[in-house]
Amino acid sequence: MKPGGAPAYWDRAKRALVRSDEVLARIIRSHPGIALQRRGEPFFTLARAIVGQQISVKASLSIWSRLLVLAPRMLPEQVLEAGCTALAQCGLSARKAEYLADLAGHFADGTLRPLAWGEMDDEAVVAELVRVRGIGRWTAEMFLIFNLMRPDVLPLADLGVQRAIGLHYFRGRSVSPRTMRRVAAAWVPWRSVATWYLWRSLDPVPVEY
Image 1: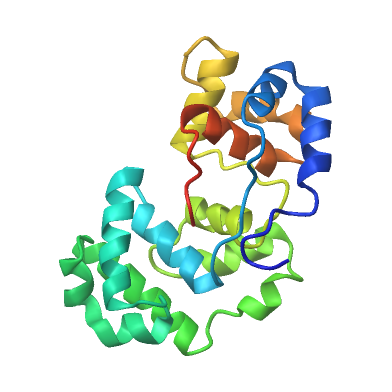
Image 2: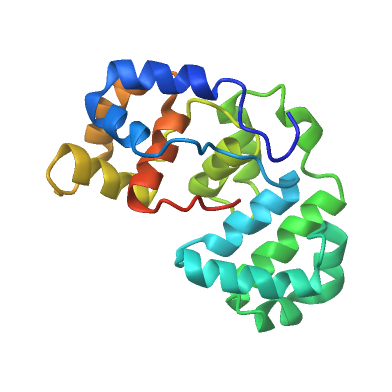
């Protein structure tokens, strides 16, 4: 699949989710003509996810635009050449600047093996990624969804998913991971697609990773 293309499974997944879940069916029908789009290379996607950790989408976009002045193609070598001080001057915290530089180092020295990830299962990819400073399970799951286009990822720690499930299924009440898994059982094997539409129910403009 080329960058910018929707996953081949998307329409099939939508049909299955519409049949299996009335709530999700309403959300899907209210957001026609849009789909998950892959954007960028593995380093680009992971760097974007690190930048977006625990800040608003608006703040993330602002910082990202400044980083692209430093590293126009967002290549590991460009990030390493810029250095942590310049990265922090773009609006990153000192810790996030270190995380981004550390990620670039892992790509540059071959510690990470992006060419192998396509043949690895989801949990194996997560296990490799979380060994990098600054990459936790949430960031690894965003990578699975947005870069590897894995169809059945349920990011339980994602605040948007938590909020959307509570809003649409429990009249706005907060939900536990156990409850989220129970609701999402009807979405297997398309939980990534369901997640993406839950995000759209909160924000119609797709986030880019």
